[in-house]
Length: 161
Image (cartoon, rainbow, N blue to C red):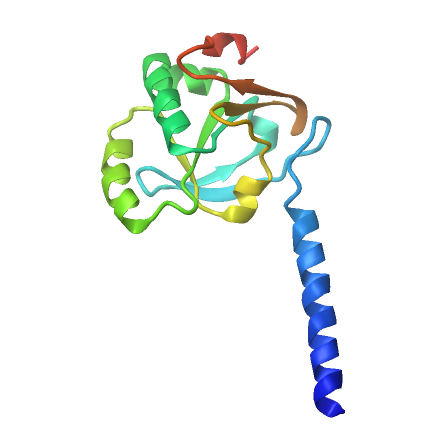
């Protein structure tokens, strides 16, 4: 009887925890206030995202889209990104060790800053469309719009307005 009670209690706690955690990972929506987060960049430097000081947050969700985005952002340059108060996050969560071994040295060659999204809960907060970079426009820390940029096809400047 004691074992059944422990099993039932454990199951209830586990289900409550899963339900709560799932609720936390719902993607951001227009009008929501963004939370600050901490991560590392491609040079292993600490980065703290401050939504009130950021106008645009760009998030690539897969490696191929990230490569196309990096090609465009290289042309745009870090100074332009800083002027526009734009931050770029690349999802590296789930990238296997061997992939990281080859990807990280390449990332370090880029002049623009790449914030490494290496946390499943963080990445789950950003809405996504296949093959596109999510562009969240922020106004005083709140999301004023969510758009999806196809790097290499769409001009980036039309998304940073």
